Length: 173
Image (cartoon, rainbow, N blue to C red; front, side, top):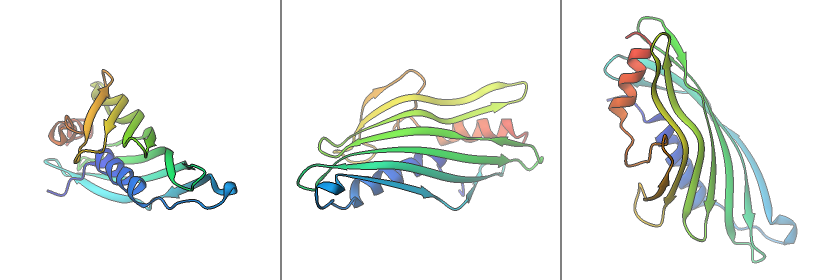
């Protein structure tokens, strides 16, 4: 299957990268480090309808260090800009915006914002992932969900088939 888990996989990969690779700061003037990153466009295909998505991700954030130079907290804002086109030629936008807070001491992450929201003309909202998700990442992936708001989808509850079906309906494939 060539479908990728757009927001879940990208978010999980970025979380893992941030948790695992942040370098210690040195000196009092380096207690805060800002960063920006924009991914080149990537594409994926949703089965069974063959809808093709092109997405790019922008992130901006800040790493916070203690006096010893140890990373203690990271805050990141992600923006996902995406267009999905069905074999019918109909396209929809799937844009998402999330803020991520990582407490490196406790291993707890908090995601807040809008992830995948699929809408179709005349159909309304077909899939929605919005709200707040708090996860303990000190246990194996997908971590232990500590809190999920009413319309947020946890890593354990993510259903690629449901998302793919909604996308296929939305693009008329």
